[in-house]
Amino acid sequence: LMAEKGGYKHFMLKEIYEQPRALADTIAGRLQSEEGNIYLEDFGLSDAQLAGLDKIFIIACGTSWHAGLVGKFYIEKLARIPVEIDIASEFRYRDPIVTDKSLTILISQSGETADTLAALREAKGKGGKSVCICNVVDSSIARESDGVIYTHAGPEIGVASTKAFTTQLVALYLLALKLGRSCGTLTADSCRDKVEDLLALPRKLEETLELDEQIEKIARDSMNARDFLYLGRGNQYPIALEGALKLKEISYIHAEGYPAGEMKHGPIALIDENLPVVVLVPQNNIYDKVVSNMEEVCARGGKVIAITSGEESGLQGKVDTLIQVPQTTDDLMPILTSIPMQLLAYHIAVLKGTDVDQPRNLAKSVTVE
Ligand code: G6P
Image (cartoon, rainbow, N blue to C red; front, side):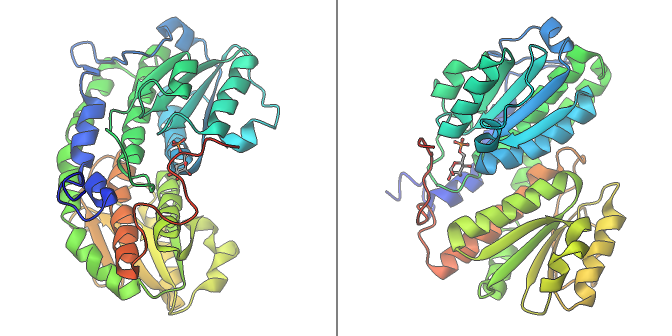
């Protein structure tokens, strides 16, 4: 069994460490640098079909839904098409306004989640086009969608999703670039630049994994907390949700993800010296806003674990704990900040002695409603 885990103690840790390779595999063969285009082999929809879209739905469950929340930022920014995102079990019963000018994007690691499959059938039944982002080849959702973008992350065994999530983000970015090119909102030059950023990402993810030891120490210091709060804004808000979900899933500690600017409307009442607050504060255009949200936590004695980017963020000495991931573009930053989320949950779970790869009450793929 140890061999199957490639020498790692758990599948989850192995899969966390596989991410630089997994990301490279998601990108491989999909970049046409000469044309400044993106090539998605089983995509199934023509450029003309894409250019005629007036609305996009992104539908998924669990961690895949969190990827979708980031995907909305990508698509609206690069292709300027309105995106509605929904949880599959909600979408399927709300009579959504899908037309023949709608594209529904289903995201599913397994390709077998019952609610996501039902949502696909609902969208198709209303005459909309569909494309899925799946990891498992030839799965039900992959077979029934008009097109498929495989993440090529390789088998994911740990119930808590890690490499499937970060590769979903890359696949969504590729899709947004493709949409941007088809819709005329993204120039070939600009697409080429963004592709360069993507190509540099696996190396940066490798660097990010070097935080492992530091995060293990942070886990030791915070493992006895009863609750955790995770805060982020913009495309980091979904990563706050994902960080909280990872912790709940494998360590059984209650955790909540919240938009940092919304904290003052409720969660701020929870803050005291016993509450670890993970704040996602990479250097970007809303950095100052998030810093000021963070200062509100500090002022109330909350124990801040700040995740920032780059060498000189100006936070040194300002917070209890500072984690620094490498700098990348604002779009790709959620992929790097996901890593400390995964490692923190992993180490706390290991220290608590839970069954990391097969947490209680959870299944890798939920094939019943
Ligand atoms: C289950 C798993 C989660 C996963 C969700 C959606 O709840 O435990 O890790 O995110 O299903 O799965 P899917 O295969 O559709 O991405």
